[in-house]
Every structure is written in C-alpha cells, then in structure tokens.
Length: 220
Image (tube, rainbow, N blue to C red; front, top):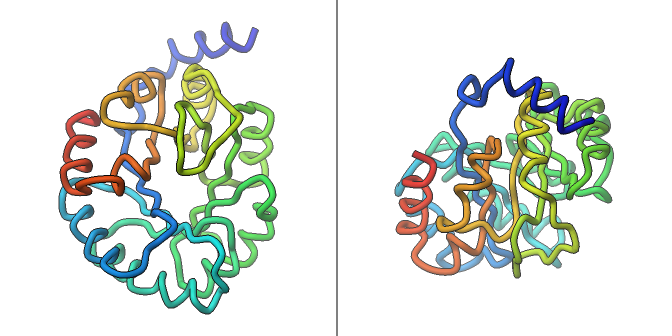
C-alpha cells in the first residue's frame, strides 16, 4: 500500500520539482595534521553542500581545537558545517547544525539548544517509522543507509533505494543517502530520489580533489 501511495505522489510531485542532488562530505576520524589543507582542496574542487565533522575518542576541548579551523574553511567556502553526534559541541563550535544518531539525543532538545536556524539531521537506518518520527520532531533532514558495504561506519542495515523515493514524494524535507557510496555506484541512489549523497572514504581514501570532481560529474 505504501508503494502504491508513493507512486501516486510521484505522479503529482515529480522529482524534477526538487533541487538537484548535492554532495555531503563526512570527515575521516583523523582530522589532524594536513587535513585542513585537504578539506580546502576538496571544497575548491567542486560543489559541496555540507561537511560533517566526525571525530571519536577525544574530549570536547580537543574536538573544539580540531574543529574550529575546519569550521572556518567551510564558512569561507559557503559550505554548511555540521557536527556529528553532539549538540553541545555544535553549539561550542558555532556550527550550522548537528547530525544525531538514534542514541545521540532528542531533536527538540537540540533545537532548543541550537536555535531555529540550525540544521538538524537524524540517522534513520532503513526505517520509515523512524524517519517520520524525526520529521514530526522537527528534523531538517533524515538519513538512510548504509546502502552499500562500508568500512567508515559498518552497519547491519541495508535499505532498498525505494525508501528515498518514498520520502521525497511524501515529504518536503530532504533525505540523505549514506554508506559506501562512490562515483561508480551513486547513480541509482540519485535516480531513486536522494537529495544528498553523504560520502567519506570515497573522497578521503585517495585524491580528494579528483574524487569530488568525479562526484560532480555524476551529480550533473
């Protein structure tokens, strides 16, 4: 029944009425050393909509030290700077928003802390129910995945790409596809309805500028 309903909405609200799919970069866990230069090079290579700052195993003071130069680079490039997991860290950094996993806090609490203009995203795995709950709570976007095998953040979830079309035909807020996405396998997710494709190792695992350029060609 949901698929039939989505087909009906797709006929009324075709994909071309939504903005073109955009690139959403996620940092590697190690952003020390020359990484700020790599980020600058990636952002100079092609259009990037957002960058997610994702570090693990460091205290908030160190996270702020690592994140602040990256936030400035994103601001200079007019790229949204999103902090992973922690609304309090996002507030300390003056980030544009926060991305919350299912165990990382409540959307409403994050909104109260960060304000009306903050971009709040929520990981929804392969669940339409979790996505609708996130939307009702005021999330600005929902993320589905992992669509492909990934070493960045291994996941037991493997949503069908049709979940992207279901979301974009029924709801106005964007959806993000994540998990093992490369320039070679991104096209089906874009065609299915992803508003953003989130990538990490496909960019940082090699020549970041060449990878961003390759994604730009796929995104058109």
